[in-house]
Length: 116
Image (cartoon, rainbow, N blue to C red; front, side):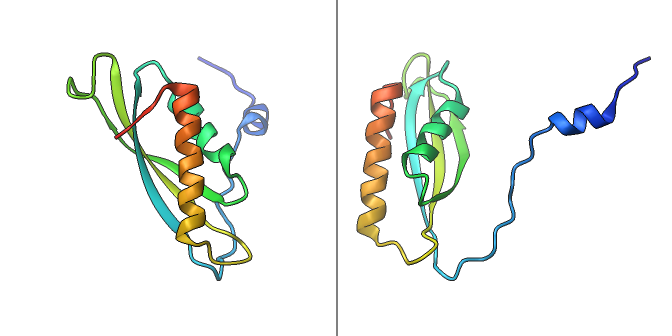
């Protein structure tokens, strides 16, 4: 048997805020596939991606994980979907491309990621 204080449990739970009013400006999605060492944590990689352009990144999700000898020994491929959106205007492809390049450089520096 077990006794549990649910009010303490609920107060410690961290909820993700999903609701946001619909924007009148469109979003731009980019998928980014990288190869990293198996021991690298997905959460750390997602944090680096999201913190790079916090103002314009509205969501980052892991959409695919793949392991194969083709990638390399002790490596795995991760694919992230990054959603860019400005609250006050429509972002251009040039702006998003620059942000993606910045993210790629950061991932290469911090995790020795290889772009796939």
